[in-house]
Length: 431
Image (cartoon, rainbow, N blue to C red):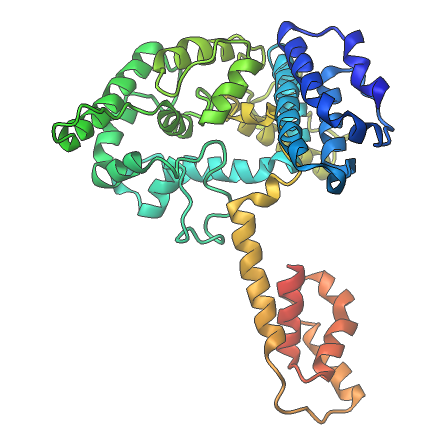
């Protein structure tokens, strides 16, 4: 452990990374005896990997039960500092990565950051929510704005609405959105749905957005001098949903992390100017953001596309189309996907509102099936039960994996379940 903790001294650290390392040592000191008892097997040679490994050791291998009460505060600070270091390291890579490296990196984050689920959200917004907010259903309007509710059925909204930036705490914004959706439509109309977005487009949106908040403040001030300032984070959620290739969606925590990661001066949640000039301006210098729009496979030249020849069968052509389509999707959402360069806890994807709603419904269904006691036991021989099950498994609409569950289905029928209920139970459990 001592060798691991001192290894960054030999690494080429940036000024920000060196500051992170010095802060880390400060929080390590009150935990040193406990950390020395942890067995170290992996010693990364880069600072990003080092931060990730020390976080893992703290969360998985450190004997928490042996810590004194006063040690929990520095442990929490240590983990937060290491998360910042990890994010800074990955953002440093993001600043220089060419398009192929960006794509590979984003795909590698699929499980950890729930990339597929995030893309389902963005696809839904693009297909169904790019018309006026005033014409959307309440659920779709909230999906665009970033607030999950119990009315968002997980079968329709098979994604967490609050990926990228939740706005559930912005009560004033949601009250205004409910009352005056057409005013937000007017603001968003300044941002073109295709082509470049320039400063004039952005500033016209900002002026209208601020005017909505200012009008609310004047209407509800009642002589009170306190003013409600327009929240930048909420505005970036709207902008990023309209143009995920141009804007980054923020919350208060991400402002701090991304400013450090992108080496820009930290700005506040009301600083619309710095968001555009510093953060979006910096984003637009990155090689992967400046990548030319990938062409669909059918439009690609023979040099860049898979040639349809005797050497390529239908499978390889289909795979090529899938790769081209995926790359096109990532390009259309490239700005907002900078989220995947931030540190993510291994439990992040499982804490998705969609996953929790889905699992809750599944567990409820399974428990309901299992709790029904059988009032009458069918008097059938073992042979007749097996015959009934085999007959049911011959149905064309059953997935192939159900054949492997034959013995389990027979067991359930013997306990008094009908064949249909036993098969439903297996499908509920195994999808």
